[in-house]
Length: 354
Ligand code: SAH
Image (cartoon, rainbow, N blue to C red; front, side, top):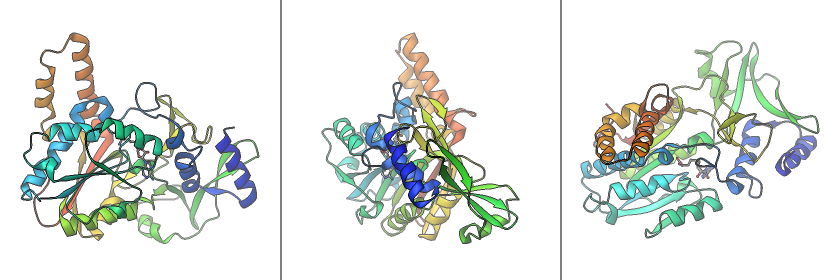
Protein backbone atom coordinates (compact mmCIF):
# COMPACT_ATOMS: atom_id res chain seq x y z
CA UNK A 1 0.00 0.00 0.00
CA UNK A 2 1.18 3.55 -0.73
CA UNK A 3 2.16 5.87 2.18
CA UNK A 4 -1.06 7.83 1.63
CA UNK A 5 -3.03 4.57 1.61
CA UNK A 6 -1.52 3.61 4.98
CA UNK A 7 -2.47 6.98 6.46
CA UNK A 8 -6.04 6.65 5.12
CA UNK A 9 -6.35 3.09 6.50
CA UNK A 10 -5.33 4.39 9.96
CA UNK A 11 -7.86 7.21 9.67
CA UNK A 12 -10.73 4.90 8.67
CA UNK A 13 -9.84 2.51 11.50
CA UNK A 14 -9.93 5.44 13.96
CA UNK A 15 -13.02 7.31 12.73
CA UNK A 16 -15.00 4.93 10.50
CA UNK A 17 -15.80 4.64 6.77
CA UNK A 18 -15.00 7.69 4.66
CA UNK A 19 -17.26 9.37 2.05
CA UNK A 20 -15.86 9.28 -1.51
CA UNK A 21 -15.41 13.07 -1.49
CA UNK A 22 -12.94 12.89 1.41
CA UNK A 23 -11.06 9.97 -0.15
CA UNK A 24 -10.86 11.77 -3.53
CA UNK A 25 -9.66 15.03 -1.95
CA UNK A 26 -6.86 13.25 -0.08
CA UNK A 27 -5.79 11.22 -3.14
CA UNK A 28 -5.58 14.26 -5.42
CA UNK A 29 -4.59 17.12 -3.13
CA UNK A 30 -2.81 15.75 -0.02
CA UNK A 31 0.08 18.24 0.34
CA UNK A 32 2.79 15.55 0.63
CA UNK A 33 1.43 12.43 -1.07
CA UNK A 34 -1.44 13.68 -3.27
CA UNK A 35 -1.49 12.99 -7.00
CA UNK A 36 -1.18 16.63 -8.10
CA UNK A 37 1.52 17.33 -5.48
CA UNK A 38 3.79 14.48 -6.59
CA UNK A 39 3.05 13.23 -10.12
CA UNK A 40 3.48 14.63 -13.65
CA UNK A 41 0.11 13.62 -15.07
CA UNK A 42 0.32 14.79 -18.65
CA UNK A 43 1.53 13.55 -22.02
CA UNK A 44 2.93 10.29 -23.36
CA UNK A 45 4.96 9.54 -20.19
CA UNK A 46 2.09 10.56 -17.89
CA UNK A 47 -1.36 9.18 -17.13
CA UNK A 48 -3.73 10.94 -19.51
CA UNK A 49 -3.74 13.32 -22.47
CA UNK A 50 -5.86 16.46 -22.50
CA UNK A 51 -7.13 18.46 -25.50
CA UNK A 52 -4.53 21.28 -25.28
CA UNK A 53 -1.79 18.63 -25.22
CA UNK A 54 -3.26 16.98 -28.34
CA UNK A 55 -3.27 20.07 -30.56
CA UNK A 56 -2.54 23.78 -30.42
CA UNK A 57 -5.82 24.29 -32.34
CA UNK A 58 -7.86 23.66 -29.19
CA UNK A 59 -6.43 26.70 -27.39
CA UNK A 60 -6.44 28.79 -30.55
CA UNK A 61 -10.17 28.26 -31.12
CA UNK A 62 -11.10 28.92 -27.47
CA UNK A 63 -8.82 31.98 -27.35
CA UNK A 64 -10.42 33.47 -30.43
CA UNK A 65 -13.88 32.72 -29.01
CA UNK A 66 -13.00 34.71 -25.85
CA UNK A 67 -11.43 37.54 -27.89
CA UNK A 68 -14.46 37.76 -30.20
CA UNK A 69 -16.73 38.06 -27.17
CA UNK A 70 -14.47 40.77 -25.70
CA UNK A 71 -14.68 42.72 -29.00
CA UNK A 72 -18.48 42.23 -29.14
CA UNK A 73 -18.74 43.58 -25.57
CA UNK A 74 -17.03 46.81 -26.65
CA UNK A 75 -13.45 45.83 -25.70
CA UNK A 76 -13.47 46.52 -21.92
CA UNK A 77 -10.26 48.40 -21.04
CA UNK A 78 -9.21 45.97 -18.32
CA UNK A 79 -10.33 42.41 -17.67
CA UNK A 80 -9.26 39.17 -16.02
CA UNK A 81 -8.06 36.44 -18.37
CA UNK A 82 -8.40 33.42 -16.10
CA UNK A 83 -7.84 29.70 -16.26
CA UNK A 84 -8.86 27.20 -13.59
CA UNK A 85 -6.69 24.07 -13.35
CA UNK A 86 -4.16 25.05 -16.06
CA UNK A 87 -2.05 21.87 -15.95
CA UNK A 88 1.18 22.56 -17.81
CA UNK A 89 0.02 26.01 -18.99
CA UNK A 90 -0.27 24.86 -22.61
CA UNK A 91 -3.85 26.07 -23.12
CA UNK A 92 -3.10 29.57 -21.82
CA UNK A 93 0.07 29.75 -23.94
CA UNK A 94 -1.94 28.83 -27.06
CA UNK A 95 -4.63 31.40 -26.17
CA UNK A 96 -1.98 34.10 -25.77
CA UNK A 97 -0.32 33.23 -29.08
CA UNK A 98 -3.63 33.13 -30.97
CA UNK A 99 -4.87 36.44 -29.57
CA UNK A 100 -1.62 38.39 -30.17
CA UNK A 101 -3.12 39.81 -33.35
CA UNK A 102 -6.31 41.07 -31.64
CA UNK A 103 -5.55 44.79 -31.06
CA UNK A 104 -5.67 45.76 -27.38
CA UNK A 105 -6.74 42.34 -26.06
CA UNK A 106 -3.55 41.34 -24.27
CA UNK A 107 -2.77 44.84 -23.04
CA UNK A 108 -6.16 44.84 -21.29
CA UNK A 109 -5.77 41.33 -19.81
CA UNK A 110 -4.60 40.41 -16.29
CA UNK A 111 -3.69 36.73 -16.45
CA UNK A 112 -4.95 34.86 -13.36
CA UNK A 113 -4.54 31.12 -12.74
CA UNK A 114 -6.30 29.03 -10.09
CA UNK A 115 -3.96 26.13 -9.34
CA UNK A 116 -3.70 23.92 -6.24
CA UNK A 117 -0.42 22.21 -7.12
CA UNK A 118 2.84 24.04 -6.31
CA UNK A 119 4.64 21.67 -8.64
CA UNK A 120 2.38 22.56 -11.58
CA UNK A 121 2.58 26.29 -10.74
CA UNK A 122 6.32 26.04 -11.42
CA UNK A 123 5.69 24.32 -14.77
CA UNK A 124 3.10 27.00 -15.68
CA UNK A 125 5.53 29.78 -14.78
CA UNK A 126 8.10 28.41 -17.22
CA UNK A 127 5.53 27.83 -19.96
CA UNK A 128 4.17 31.40 -19.63
CA UNK A 129 7.56 33.13 -19.18
CA UNK A 130 7.40 36.67 -20.54
CA UNK A 131 3.81 37.20 -19.30
CA UNK A 132 2.75 38.68 -15.96
CA UNK A 133 0.76 35.99 -14.18
CA UNK A 134 -1.04 35.97 -10.82
CA UNK A 135 -1.90 32.68 -9.10
CA UNK A 136 -4.91 32.37 -6.80
CA UNK A 137 -5.99 29.64 -4.36
CA UNK A 138 -9.78 30.17 -4.41
CA UNK A 139 -12.34 31.30 -7.00
CA UNK A 140 -13.50 34.14 -4.77
CA UNK A 141 -10.06 35.78 -5.19
CA UNK A 142 -11.01 36.57 -8.82
CA UNK A 143 -10.76 40.35 -9.25
CA UNK A 144 -13.98 42.38 -9.46
CA UNK A 145 -13.65 43.01 -13.20
CA UNK A 146 -14.90 41.64 -16.53
CA UNK A 147 -13.95 37.97 -16.66
CA UNK A 148 -12.85 35.79 -19.57
CA UNK A 149 -12.26 32.30 -18.19
CA UNK A 150 -11.36 28.80 -19.38
CA UNK A 151 -11.54 25.56 -17.41
CA UNK A 152 -10.60 22.36 -19.23
CA UNK A 153 -10.73 19.14 -17.19
CA UNK A 154 -10.82 21.13 -13.93
CA UNK A 155 -14.31 20.34 -12.64
CA UNK A 156 -13.86 16.57 -13.15
CA UNK A 157 -11.07 16.65 -10.54
CA UNK A 158 -13.33 18.08 -7.82
CA UNK A 159 -14.51 15.61 -5.16
CA UNK A 160 -17.90 13.91 -5.57
CA UNK A 161 -20.29 12.12 -3.27
CA UNK A 162 -22.14 9.14 -4.67
CA UNK A 163 -25.62 7.90 -3.72
CA UNK A 164 -27.63 4.80 -4.59
CA UNK A 165 -31.41 5.06 -4.45
CA UNK A 166 -33.08 2.42 -2.29
CA UNK A 167 -36.66 1.78 -1.21
CA UNK A 168 -36.26 3.86 1.96
CA UNK A 169 -33.92 6.68 0.88
CA UNK A 170 -30.43 7.27 -0.51
CA UNK A 171 -27.41 5.17 0.56
CA UNK A 172 -24.05 6.93 0.26
CA UNK A 173 -20.97 5.14 -1.12
CA UNK A 174 -18.28 4.96 1.57
CA UNK A 175 -14.68 3.75 1.55
CA UNK A 176 -14.03 0.92 4.04
CA UNK A 177 -10.85 -1.01 4.89
CA UNK A 178 -9.92 -4.50 6.10
CA UNK A 179 -6.62 -3.11 7.40
CA UNK A 180 -4.72 -4.01 4.20
CA UNK A 181 -6.87 -2.75 1.31
CA UNK A 182 -9.88 -0.58 0.62
CA UNK A 183 -13.36 -1.57 -0.54
CA UNK A 184 -16.64 0.25 -1.20
CA UNK A 185 -19.65 0.00 1.08
CA UNK A 186 -23.03 1.73 1.36
CA UNK A 187 -24.24 3.76 4.32
CA UNK A 188 -27.68 3.30 5.87
CA UNK A 189 -30.51 4.84 3.82
CA UNK A 190 -31.53 8.42 4.53
CA UNK A 191 -33.22 11.38 2.90
CA UNK A 192 -30.90 13.77 1.04
CA UNK A 193 -32.61 17.09 0.41
CA UNK A 194 -30.48 18.02 -2.60
CA UNK A 195 -31.58 14.78 -4.29
CA UNK A 196 -35.33 15.24 -3.80
CA UNK A 197 -35.77 16.44 -7.39
CA UNK A 198 -33.98 13.30 -8.65
CA UNK A 199 -36.82 11.10 -7.35
CA UNK A 200 -38.63 12.05 -10.57
CA UNK A 201 -36.03 10.69 -13.01
CA UNK A 202 -34.38 7.80 -11.10
CA UNK A 203 -35.53 4.41 -9.86
CA UNK A 204 -34.57 1.84 -7.23
CA UNK A 205 -30.84 1.09 -7.69
CA UNK A 206 -30.05 4.27 -9.65
CA UNK A 207 -26.71 5.93 -8.81
CA UNK A 208 -26.43 9.73 -8.69
CA UNK A 209 -23.28 11.76 -7.99
CA UNK A 210 -23.17 15.21 -6.39
CA UNK A 211 -20.22 17.56 -6.68
CA UNK A 212 -20.81 19.99 -3.81
CA UNK A 213 -17.35 21.54 -4.28
CA UNK A 214 -18.19 22.75 -7.80
CA UNK A 215 -21.23 24.82 -6.82
CA UNK A 216 -19.60 27.76 -4.96
CA UNK A 217 -16.96 27.94 -7.71
CA UNK A 218 -19.38 28.14 -10.63
CA UNK A 219 -21.60 30.43 -8.59
CA UNK A 220 -18.69 32.86 -8.07
CA UNK A 221 -17.97 32.77 -11.81
CA UNK A 222 -21.66 33.42 -12.61
CA UNK A 223 -21.82 36.31 -10.14
CA UNK A 224 -18.71 37.99 -11.63
CA UNK A 225 -20.06 37.57 -15.18
CA UNK A 226 -23.53 38.87 -14.29
CA UNK A 227 -22.02 41.91 -12.58
CA UNK A 228 -18.98 42.79 -14.71
CA UNK A 229 -19.53 40.96 -18.02
CA UNK A 230 -17.37 38.45 -19.88
CA UNK A 231 -17.51 34.77 -20.82
CA UNK A 232 -16.52 31.49 -19.18
CA UNK A 233 -16.02 28.26 -21.14
CA UNK A 234 -16.13 25.08 -19.06
CA UNK A 235 -14.99 21.99 -20.95
CA UNK A 236 -15.15 18.48 -19.50
CA UNK A 237 -15.99 14.83 -19.75
CA UNK A 238 -19.60 14.34 -18.69
CA UNK A 239 -23.18 15.04 -19.65
CA UNK A 240 -26.44 16.73 -18.82
CA UNK A 241 -27.60 15.34 -15.41
CA UNK A 242 -25.53 12.83 -13.44
CA UNK A 243 -26.65 9.20 -13.67
CA UNK A 244 -24.57 6.10 -12.93
CA UNK A 245 -21.20 5.37 -11.37
CA UNK A 246 -18.50 7.49 -13.06
CA UNK A 247 -15.88 7.44 -10.26
CA UNK A 248 -12.74 6.32 -12.10
CA UNK A 249 -8.95 6.32 -12.00
CA UNK A 250 -6.26 6.35 -14.68
CA UNK A 251 -2.60 5.49 -14.47
CA UNK A 252 -0.26 5.23 -17.45
CA UNK A 253 -3.15 5.71 -19.91
CA UNK A 254 -5.10 2.71 -18.52
CA UNK A 255 -8.07 2.49 -16.21
CA UNK A 256 -7.17 1.20 -12.74
CA UNK A 257 -9.17 0.74 -9.54
CA UNK A 258 -9.54 4.11 -7.75
CA UNK A 259 -8.94 2.22 -4.49
CA UNK A 260 -5.73 0.41 -5.52
CA UNK A 261 -2.93 3.00 -5.25
CA UNK A 262 -4.09 6.17 -3.48
CA UNK A 263 -2.02 9.17 -4.61
CA UNK A 264 -0.48 7.48 -7.65
CA UNK A 265 -3.46 7.47 -10.04
CA UNK A 266 -5.55 10.33 -11.38
CA UNK A 267 -9.10 10.13 -10.00
CA UNK A 268 -12.03 11.85 -11.70
CA UNK A 269 -15.80 11.73 -12.09
CA UNK A 270 -18.00 12.93 -14.94
CA UNK A 271 -19.20 16.52 -14.72
CA UNK A 272 -22.93 17.12 -14.24
CA UNK A 273 -23.42 20.11 -16.54
CA UNK A 274 -27.06 20.58 -15.53
CA UNK A 275 -25.92 21.20 -11.94
CA UNK A 276 -23.23 23.68 -13.07
CA UNK A 277 -25.69 25.47 -15.33
CA UNK A 278 -28.34 25.72 -12.59
CA UNK A 279 -25.82 27.26 -10.17
CA UNK A 280 -24.63 29.77 -12.79
CA UNK A 281 -28.22 30.73 -13.64
CA UNK A 282 -29.07 31.11 -9.94
CA UNK A 283 -26.11 33.52 -9.72
CA UNK A 284 -27.68 35.68 -12.45
CA UNK A 285 -25.86 34.44 -15.57
CA UNK A 286 -27.03 32.73 -18.75
CA UNK A 287 -25.65 29.43 -20.15
CA UNK A 288 -25.34 27.52 -23.45
CA UNK A 289 -24.37 23.85 -23.77
CA UNK A 290 -23.00 21.83 -26.71
CA UNK A 291 -20.51 19.08 -27.48
CA UNK A 292 -16.84 19.97 -27.87
CA UNK A 293 -16.97 18.84 -31.52
CA UNK A 294 -19.94 21.09 -32.31
CA UNK A 295 -18.31 24.17 -30.79
CA UNK A 296 -14.83 23.64 -32.29
CA UNK A 297 -16.35 23.01 -35.72
CA UNK A 298 -18.56 26.12 -35.51
CA UNK A 299 -15.50 28.15 -34.47
CA UNK A 300 -13.72 27.12 -37.69
CA UNK A 301 -11.26 24.43 -36.57
CA UNK A 302 -11.36 22.70 -39.98
CA UNK A 303 -10.24 25.84 -41.83
CA UNK A 304 -7.48 26.33 -39.26
CA UNK A 305 -6.45 22.68 -39.62
CA UNK A 306 -6.22 23.04 -43.41
CA UNK A 307 -3.97 26.05 -43.06
CA UNK A 308 -1.68 24.32 -40.52
CA UNK A 309 -1.56 21.17 -42.70
CA UNK A 310 0.14 22.97 -45.57
CA UNK A 311 3.78 21.97 -45.85
CA UNK A 312 3.71 19.31 -43.09
CA UNK A 313 5.81 16.17 -43.66
CA UNK A 314 3.71 12.95 -43.96
CA UNK A 315 4.28 11.84 -40.33
CA UNK A 316 3.53 15.28 -38.90
CA UNK A 317 0.48 15.56 -41.18
CA UNK A 318 -0.81 12.21 -39.92
CA UNK A 319 -0.42 13.38 -36.27
CA UNK A 320 -2.09 16.67 -37.08
CA UNK A 321 -5.11 14.99 -38.73
CA UNK A 322 -5.47 12.41 -35.99
CA UNK A 323 -5.41 15.27 -33.43
CA UNK A 324 -8.21 17.03 -35.31
CA UNK A 325 -10.23 13.81 -35.34
CA UNK A 326 -9.72 13.14 -31.62
CA UNK A 327 -10.80 16.66 -30.71
CA UNK A 328 -13.89 16.81 -32.93
CA UNK A 329 -15.20 13.35 -33.95
CA UNK A 330 -18.27 11.57 -32.60
CA UNK A 331 -17.30 8.65 -30.41
CA UNK A 332 -14.13 10.54 -29.43
CA UNK A 333 -13.50 13.68 -27.38
CA UNK A 334 -15.63 15.64 -29.86
CA UNK A 335 -18.71 13.94 -28.46
CA UNK A 336 -17.63 12.71 -25.02
CA UNK A 337 -16.52 16.17 -23.94
CA UNK A 338 -19.07 18.94 -23.49
CA UNK A 339 -18.77 22.70 -23.30
CA UNK A 340 -20.79 25.02 -21.11
CA UNK A 341 -20.63 28.74 -21.91
CA UNK A 342 -21.55 31.08 -19.04
CA UNK A 343 -22.17 34.75 -19.82
CA UNK A 344 -24.31 37.73 -18.79
CA UNK A 345 -28.07 37.74 -19.46
CA UNK A 346 -27.69 40.91 -21.49
CA UNK A 347 -24.95 41.38 -24.05
CA UNK A 348 -23.50 39.24 -26.82
CA UNK A 349 -23.96 35.48 -27.17
CA UNK A 350 -20.71 33.51 -27.49
CA UNK A 351 -19.45 32.42 -30.92
CA UNK A 352 -19.62 28.68 -31.57
CA UNK A 353 -22.82 28.01 -29.58
CA UNK A 354 -25.96 28.09 -31.72
N1 SAH B 1 -6.48 22.12 -17.91
C1 SAH B 1 -5.29 21.31 -18.04
C2 SAH B 1 -5.08 20.34 -16.86
C3 SAH B 1 -6.21 19.47 -16.42
S1 SAH B 1 -5.77 18.45 -15.03
C4 SAH B 1 -5.31 20.59 -19.36
O1 SAH B 1 -6.35 20.57 -20.00
O2 SAH B 1 -4.28 20.04 -19.76
C5 SAH B 1 -6.50 19.29 -13.65
C6 SAH B 1 -5.84 20.57 -13.25
O3 SAH B 1 -6.59 21.13 -12.18
C7 SAH B 1 -4.42 20.45 -12.71
O4 SAH B 1 -3.71 21.62 -13.05
C8 SAH B 1 -4.65 20.36 -11.20
O5 SAH B 1 -3.52 20.64 -10.43
C9 SAH B 1 -5.75 21.36 -11.03
N2 SAH B 1 -6.61 21.15 -9.85
C10 SAH B 1 -7.24 20.00 -9.50
N3 SAH B 1 -8.00 20.20 -8.40
C11 SAH B 1 -7.86 21.50 -8.07
C12 SAH B 1 -8.40 22.32 -7.02
N4 SAH B 1 -9.24 21.81 -6.12
N5 SAH B 1 -8.05 23.63 -6.99
C13 SAH B 1 -7.21 24.13 -7.92
N6 SAH B 1 -6.66 23.41 -8.92
C14 SAH B 1 -6.98 22.11 -8.99
